[in-house]
Image (cartoon, rainbow, N blue to C red; front, side):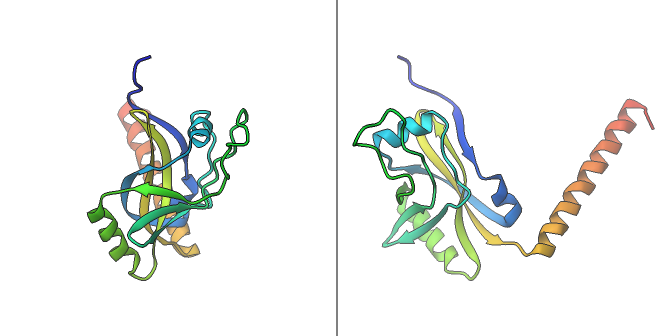
Length: 158
C-alpha cells in the first residue's frame, strides 16, 4: 500500500480564533498509542478544552479528547490523557520563554495527518475580553461588506 501524502484535517478549534488573539503558531508531532491513531483516522477528536503545558523541558498536550476506538479491546487508551508533543529543543525553549510572559498560553488550533504522521498545530495566544471580541466581529463584518461591494462593482451591479 502506498504511503499517505498531503494533509488530512482531523479536528479544528474554530472557537480558539474567536476567544484568543493568536500571536504565532508551531507544528508539533504527537506521541500516540495504536488505538488513538485508529480513532483519529476515523476523524474523531475534540480540541475545544485542550491546552499545552511545558513541564521539565517537554511539551504536553492536555484536555484533548480522543474517544476510545470502537473495535479496541482491553488495550484501549484513556480518552483525556496527557500526550507528549514532539518539538525541537530550541522551539520548546522559545515557547517556554514566551509563555512565562503574562497572559500567553499554548492552545491547539488544529489536529491533522501530514504525510501519514499525526500532527497538532499549537498557537501562542492571549485571551480576548468581550469588547475585543465585539471589535473583531465588527472588523470582520466590515471587511466582508467591503469585499462584497468590490465584487458587485466589478460585476457592474452598482
